[in-house]
Amino acid sequence: MSKRTWAAVDDYIVGSLFEADPVLDAVLAANHDHGLPAIDVSPAQGKLLSLLARIQGARKVLEIGTLGGYSTIWMARALPANGKIVTLELDPHHASVAQSNFERAGVSARVDLRVGPALQSLAALSAENAGPFDLIFIDADKPNNPNYLSWAMRLSRSGTVIICDNVIRDGAVLDQGGRDPNVEGARAAFSFIGADCLDGTAIQTVGAKGYDGFAIAIVE
Image (tube, rainbow, N blue to C red; front, side, top):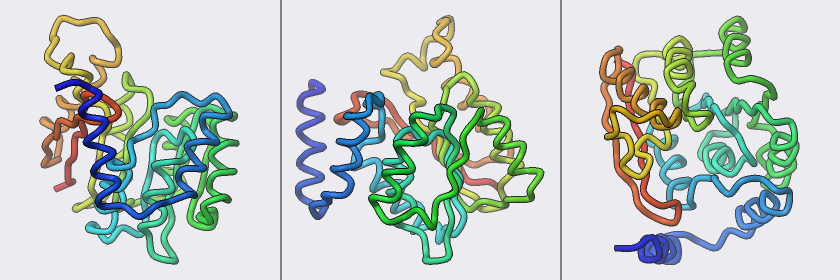
């Protein structure tokens, strides 16, 4: 099957299961208009994150990698009225677009957007005793996956759900001798989850975003 077929199936899923959402459509349009890379999660993936937050009963969510806030909004909408999502973004321009999108979506009160290098922001959150978080979504620079997972463990509790995006990389995760830092980061995520106090799996995905996948784990 081709990527065209995968994308058509994604469209079918959205058309069959989702109500029209002009706000989220406007968020993606704003991201495009402001020159952000088109690497947001797909609508089906965003809905999965939302459902996982609801299934988890999450009140506190941590997201590493905001981009334009599309995935943030999916998760923020799943939180109760007193819930909070802390989202970390390196690029000030991306963060500015994201903040406008949060206001557009009416979720600003639930979102704590922090701008700067994620490892510094994570250290600050730890110093503030901001954890534990109920759900942590990692979707930032892939070479830092093991560092982000290490901080996620410090900011979690038994039962916290940790999701790491883009771990299959078109199947390149099988390439043990490769030098692609993104692939090495994906492999490092598998090594971390397999060795630490986590019970996890990975799900391969195909769709509008091509061939990739999530690693999903729970802290024991």
